[in-house]
Length: 95
Length: 143
Image (cartoon, rainbow over all chains, first blue to last red):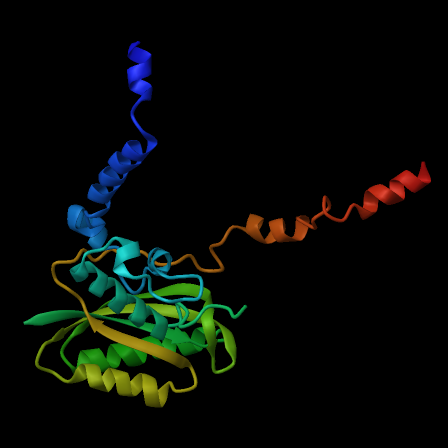
């Protein structure tokens, strides 16, 4: 009988619970929680900044990169500096 | 009060050793004139550029760090040196003040010279035999 009760939890409820868990986690900015990582945001460190670009070379929005407004600003400033030095592209390869 | 600066230079790929020495001495001269001191002058190596500059696909990066008193206008002199005197050698330059709170260590992308030779070999070896089994067919015909 106990097995049957467990099965009765609907898929919708499980989804809802998992969604809530994910939402809480993604709200933490990775740079706020780890101050050491902030030093990695540097225009010279192009390999790191490349992770914040799309395939076409656009800067990822903060809702995807997961950075808070303050650190998103730092990222985008450093990316723009890096572009001047030709370490990062202004626009990616055309299809 | 002294302030720390750094200058990242992007030069043409065919820069010679003499030109590098000349560049270094000129930077040193200007900074000494501004009663500062050069801390370091590093060669990063050759890089593939993200986009073409002056019809160059490749470039050599140099990073120099120096200290200057805040009040002097030596930085503008330095920028003028890169833009005027080394116009045909230095393609891009970026002079920036360093944050005193930040550690001086930094990370940079890996240059072409440091990249392991294995990667270059890999593209050579990987001729996609499985997709175009030409060799296998020939063997089968011989049998």
